[in-house]
Length: 205
Image (cartoon, rainbow, N blue to C red; front, side, top):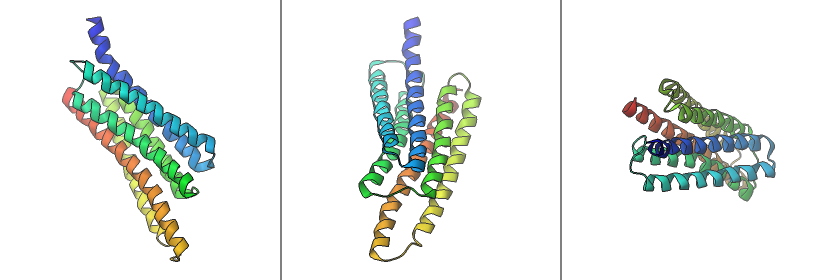
């Protein structure tokens, strides 16, 4: 019986670990947007790789375990959404380096909002089994921050398209728009993960 319980609890531990690494990675993203230091960019990449490894272990556990604490489809979907958050963040930083685009106040603001969302997502996963009402409160906050991120994203786009319309300006618009989109997509994945947690709470509590 104890072994059975340990096998079930490992899924929660892995989800929490994955959400924690995502929060840490997004914190590095915020710091990178503020400083542009290459060493911080490397830390984001490291967290993304660590998160990938945790997800691989979780999928292996899903395939090996008959009984899971929640629907295995929900566990898989939640893990995938959490993984995608950091994937988008890492891609944004990679493209900033490749395209030689520097940060700006909108990228800083978006990364700050995203960090708050990732922090609440991590807390929601931590509280999922032990304190479902607290988890619900964190889910609500994640969705609030996603709305704020979407507002900032649209504001950033609006200002971006007011830049000079010469060739160099157009190229800058296209490059920067992709960066905004990556962070907006990361926010969408936070929102998706929050929805999955909400579904789990409804089904199980």
